[in-house]
Image (spheres, rainbow, N blue to C red):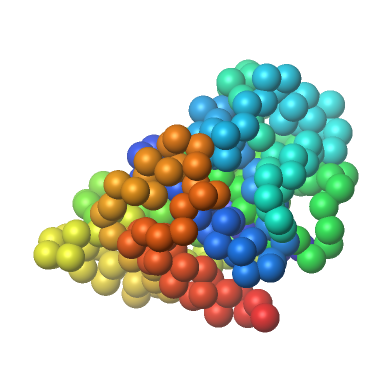
Length: 246
């Protein structure tokens, strides 16, 4: 089982769209994919037109039970989120083994061993994100063009180093995906060049409304043609290359 966390402590960079798009595209190729929505805003859950009225993920983490697994489409399943998960940001901090709650629950989940797990991380560096870093084999960092992104990336990089040394020795950064790319903006090249010196560029996602609306309106499964989706398809191939998947 390969576990990848899609991460950036800043909101609005396209983590949810990235997680959903990669999940759908990999599943269409026949790869078993399980998505985990670790953000209490539950945007990934909404992207698949699902509503977790029972707070299943919060209950699983609280009781250290198996992650809920909801079938979404062929080769694609989901652990949905809800506003209930917001309580975990304060509640879980006081618990013994708090950084391994997700790892424990994932190990108990009824998911085939050859499944690829993609985790949509919350836009913070709190206990829920810590759980994502503790269980992940690799991170996909989503960035937008801009100076703030460079500073945020540096902060995340330091956190990854700490986790690799103290919590999860296998943790690595698989690469980064740049979203909201404007072909004529020089700032795209600056951010890409600086981060690209250290990690692979998995993809450059063009600015486009169709995929964004499909995700926010819960109809991404029905979307087949989109410039941004084409870019994510290329990113999925690059990811398979970096991760050495067949």
